[in-house]
Each structure stands twice: as structure tokens, then as C-alpha cells.
Length: 155
Image 1 (cartoon, helix red, strand yellow):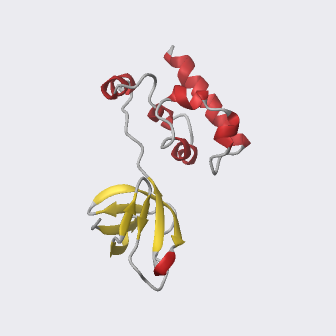
Image 2 (image 1 turned 30 degrees about the vertical axis):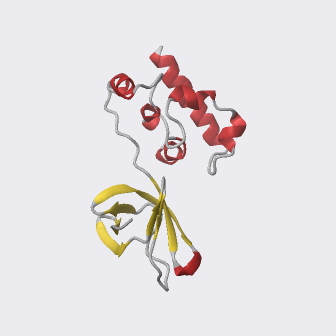
């Protein structure tokens, strides 16, 4: 895949480079270079001018390349439009995007890419959720409380 990666930090372009490869769903591979690219956690990543996500980590790869992992943007659901979005996509349940207000941003970014509906997230076992990197006992309690609040409010 060809494209130009642009890294934006605090509204300013930090770095630009052509891409070597894109590995779906959440990784970009840089071309060979001697130094680690200036991609701090939380930087905005744009490919050919299109926002693809927020940087999560930058790790060294084989042949002096670097893998930049990122969190894709969460789907935007307006207030009251959750039911419309669910029916438009054909979901059987409440879209997980409605949890964006109930959870802190870091927790939401951990679970949003992995679950489609709130019911699916609520049905996941504690052990399965604890296996996700970054989810401990406190975050698990917050996730359970947010799911219960959304599901009790939707019934």
C-alpha cells in the first residue's frame, strides 16, 4: 500500500513519511530508517490526509523498520441516534458507541474495537475481559457498571 503517513502532535505536523505497509486493523509499517520515528503515544495519525487513529505505540521491526500501532477512531453516534444506528447497520442490540460517555476514554478505546454491542460486552466473562491488556479489576468494575446503566436505561 502506498500512502503518506503524517503524525500530528498538539496540532502541528511532527513527521511525514511514505508508508512501507499497512497491517489491518491497527498497524502501520514505516520504511527503513536509522532512528525511531517521533511518534509519541496519543499523536494523531493521518494517511493521505485521512485521520486513521491515535498512536498507541511505536516498536522496532525487522530490517530497521518500525511498527506504529494505533487506536482507530470510535464511530460517532449522536444523542438519540443509537437506535437508528443499530437498525441501519442491522445490529441486534445497543451499539457499543453509546458507552463513550459512560466510560473514560482509555477504557472505551480498549473495548470499543473488540465488541459490537453493549449486550455482547456485558455477556463477556470477567476472565475474558481481564485478558485484554490494560483492563484490571477497577476498569472491569467500571465496564460492568456502565453496561448495567446503559442496559437498564434502554429497557
